[in-house]
Length: 95
Image (cartoon, rainbow, N blue to C red; front, side, top):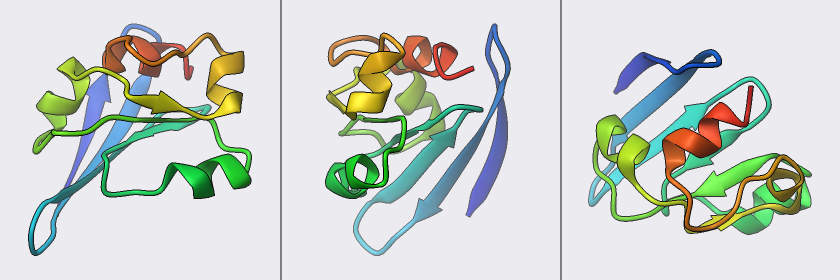
């Protein structure tokens, strides 16, 4: 397991990377929300009213930052986060 501080323009996010049996589980948490890998469930984040974005096909924290947002919760949309934007840009909007 690796926990890492990720310095962005608007704040410092916390990245969590856990090697599971068949893939990596990755979450990057900012002040207002988080970005998760495809391992986790968007429906639950939406049901809980979280600001969340999901990406997929990533295996490291660096991969996440350069990846594309695949889906977002309604609360994330309210902050201007949309599918297709870079994860690093989405995280900036979560501060």
